[in-house]
Length: 511
Image (tube, rainbow, N blue to C red):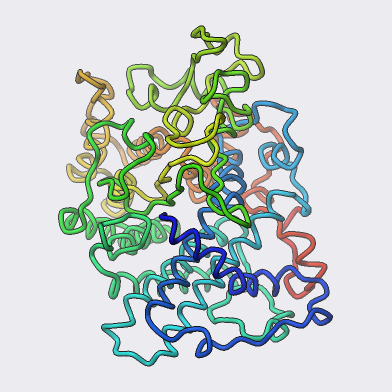
């Protein structure tokens, strides 16, 4: 994201505010809000583009991809545990499966997703009000619809049924009693938005930036959505479309796994299909561009600029069970660091004596002494994940792996063998003759390692209903005996929202 996009965040605050007002203002009727209409706000396609860039900007905030939302996803998984137990209780609740309906993390990120949606809906309505030819305006509408789909895809997986808004709200009082939309309907709306994007988005954005959606982005997310819905034929079809057109879209695996986490990454990094772009040492109102993931995962007491707060830290079992011959482990973990100018092992770390996540702290680019306000382009979707989606879906369709499915995983493993300056023989290629179940387990584990700490693991646990196995089973990496599958696959709706609008009930089970 560039400086111009950051300015759009503040410029569009009044648009996004409408989305949060309808869900977060107890005194809505007592606080008059000016009535806005798209035709008064949007005069040209450039105005629509401004709204779209503002919607992207809301994603790159401390409340969403800068800390709160993505930290919640990490802690919810079996790959990241609480390190410093002095951290606020709201984080411990998310991690320990004992959160209540007033959880502070949820209270913060819920309205921000609706600000993203509000800005996207404003762009859609504004574009439609211009009455321009389809080929001129539909690519912008498609981009706004992608952003809306991206927001709802997160919301529906975290909360299940949520309010679905598909229009620009000109009068918040008209929706103050809105109720929830069934998750199945939300998924169909997400698919419709992404299909429109696949039809109308360009193959490449200007300068081939990856922080704006393209036709390949929409198809990749269609593959992911279909995988989540266990519609494996469609998941494979969409993933195969991306793979077959990788040169057209400029996709591929980067040679060195470390380069994916070396800020500042190029804005057109080949493996990135969709990236959340932060700009080093820049910030704005509302938490805009405030990336706090490096200090959240960094080592307390380490020398600057690598020090942090030891909040989100893998369990020792995550580290110990990962084969050290895998280059991805070297990139993903920090098991020693300079403390007082001396390289010290994790056994003497000041606060949490476990290896820490290195993906975001090792090369944070232009940032402060704790890695905050980093230069990272966070990959929300990368080409490696599309390969793994294709492998899993194809094995489901064929009732077992074929050479094509195995080949997709082998591409990932070949890169994992590529240490700087040398090529090793681990991890080995996938053997032939595996059963369907064994291959699916292998792919899920490959996802766990390849996408470690990239906010994907919880969604895999949820869609495959692995909670009891990974949190209460004998091989659990992060035991939580209290995990309840009848409650914990969803987070609670914010209590304040139900108090303001009882029509949002019932609360999710168990809260």
